[in-house]
Length: 218
Image: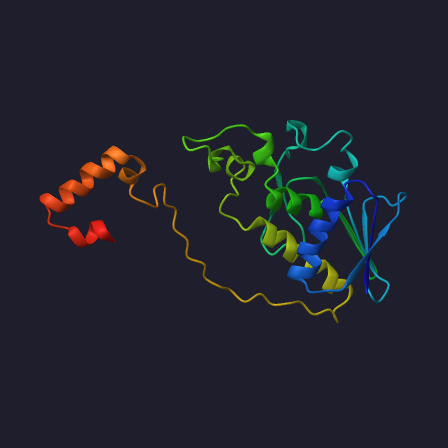
């Protein structure tokens, strides 16, 4: 079983993102051990090899993270384990040290995924459009030119590449794509029906002028 060591700070948030990555995306059994002396995250694999990741976001939280100072200052870095040429760095730095039994990475992978999936920036940034939605143009992704990139998938693939580099025997759950068709309707029902007077006039017009008696009954 994989063992993840980390501090207890924001433990519920950490458990959430561990579940997304290790259960939903990797389908790997894991155990979380609290270690207040642990610097960053330590992921210990079956064969004893370890991946060390930064926890700079989590370590700097003292009085909550829903504030502007928690928003990432994004730059782009190259990393040997990323599926693309570069990757947006949300939290951490470009440190990468690799040997046969360990990898040290300065990127706070879990924080980056948590930031993108939890949509925490929507609770920090107060900008809204005409119908009270958070506009894409106000997002960190838009402002830093990665709105159209599946950046969480890139981070997931980067972490997976680190794991299998140290333990090639690991096998990953393969997602099966599905199509979900949705429709955004501002008025799912005829707005005229919201007023008794308008409903009466419309029904009368249907009956007298347009001869739509069946429509009125239905």
